[in-house]
Image 1 (cartoon, rainbow, N blue to C red):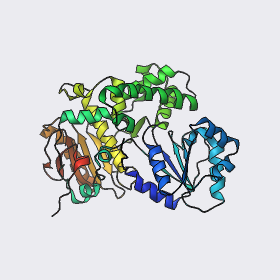
Image 2 (image 1 turned 90 degrees about the vertical axis):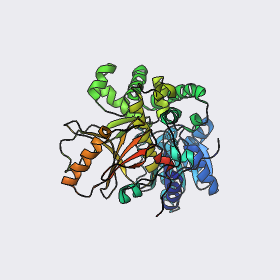
Image 3 (image 1 turned 30 degrees about the vertical axis):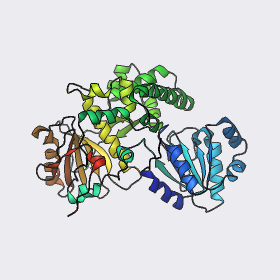
Image 4 (image 1 turned 135 degrees about the vertical axis):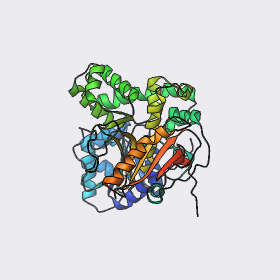
Amino acid sequence: MRYVKRHLETALDRSLEASRVVVLHGARQSGKTTLARHAAQKRGGSYVTLDDDASRLAALDDPVAYLSALRTPAVIDEVQLGGDRVVRAVKRIVDDSDERGRFLLTGSTNFLSVPTISESLAGRARILRLFPFSEAELEGSLRLDLTRWLDACSIDPPQQTEDRADYMSRLCRGGFPEAVALAPAQRQGWYDSYLETVVQRDVAELGDIRRAEALVDLVQWLAANSAGELNVQTACRQLGIDRSTFNHYFAWLRTVFMVNTVPAWSRKHAARVARRPKTHFADTGLATALLGVDADALASPTSTAAGPLLETFVANELTRQTAGSAGARLHHLRDYDGHEVDIVLERPDGALAAVEVKATGSPSENHLRPLRWLRDQLDRTAPGLFRIGVLLHTGPHCHPVGDRLWLAPINTLWHAEPQHP
């Protein structure tokens, strides 16, 4: 597959210039090795992987000597397999020198959550997360211009037209580089192997997993309930497990980046709001493979899975496009009176963009109600925070529909054409 430039590459380059150690972690097969090797090659660095038995044994035998011999920047792939012994050697080496970009560590588990690694490299490392491909990266597009959304309260129309079937094809393809390169008929087998590797190798080897079948059931349940609020009591009842088991297994699925949580949005001017996070399966291609649905099934107007999966698809795209930047953070909102907003994007200065996602190509007035409600609420309690409300849909319409409210096709997120005055 051709090299696809990652949006995170700029942040990675800057981090190597500023930090002694950079940690690049993310889901297995999300492209970390390709990006890390590309960064090292540009600087004449070296690469080793601890996924290789010989390299791992050599590193564990005398880690300081082994790592000191590597050219800068030294990429240590799958660093979690070396555990504390390797990470402490990295700490010792960088503490003896002020050299920037000495090590680039990659891992398929959350560096801060692996029990075999107690050393966090605090004050020495910049930690970056790489996600599977965003649609913008695959299209060679720039990141979404959130500044235009939040400051100009305006949306640039997409360059191309897509329909519901197109979006469902993208959704089922997912963003894992290997899966993207495969024909649709081959992806099911790839995803089956991926799940087996992550559950039976990564989680089982690092975690105290006593009921592997319960873990697989939980993965299936999370795929079926993607874009829903996390109700632990309901999950435990339906899966036949206790709360402690659920919490332990769910934490491990987050550690290997299989699920993302989106926190509830609340401020002092947003009373009576629910506090549960939403869970989104980290890749919709993997979710649809687990659920056994394809693009044709999801393209049907009667599909009940299309709406939640499309919301997850959009949430993932926004998460991937804002990763490594100082952009907006994702939240969701639901109050106890039944008002819900799918996604709330909040910038550090407090400016908000509210996003609703609908699988329809012909949005109606009713679909705009959540956005109107939040706009009016915030205008009364916190004037100036609500900047724009966007209803993303599968049709072609892109235009304003009232005060700071817009209709926009979903592919606006990766095909927007800047409009100049």
